Each structure stands twice: as C-alpha cells, then as structure tokens.
Image (cartoon, rainbow, N blue to C red; front, side, top):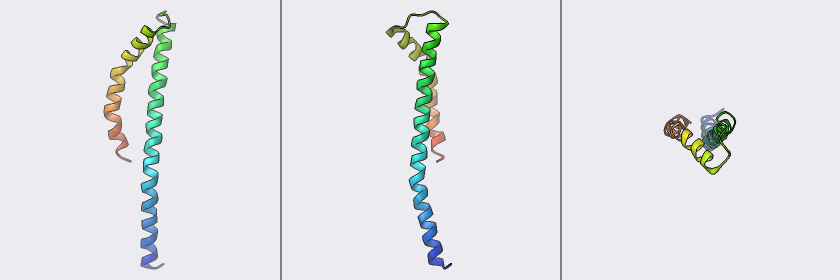
Length: 85
C-alpha cells in the first residue's frame, strides 16, 4: 500500500466521520426532546391521578411550569455534552 493510497483512505474516513457526527447529534437531540415531552405528559397524568386535578388548560400550564426549571437546566447543560461529538 503506497503512501498516496493510505492518505486517500484517511481522507475518505475523515469525510465519512464529518457526515456521521451531525446525524448522531440530531438523533440525540430528538431523543432529548422526546424524553422531555414524555416527562411533561407524565407530570400532567400524575396531577390528574394523584392530586385529583381536572384535565384542563390550567392543569397543563401548571404541569408545564413545574417542569420548566428542570428543562431549562437540561437545555443549558446538554449542548455541552453534545459538543463532544
């Protein structure tokens, strides 16, 4: 294997890695958004079931506001974790 062939192989591998990294980041971001949505729905279900609150717009707002601080903290730190890719 000549030096030119080796350099071409390394260049192709680097180009493939540049294409894969954004896809991995997008999949992780979609997973994070899905997880936050599931947690909000779970919180609203708990309000209805455990605290006997009626399913209404006020209950949805309350459930969302209770999750807001946690989501804001996660939104602040998760891009730092994604930056590694």
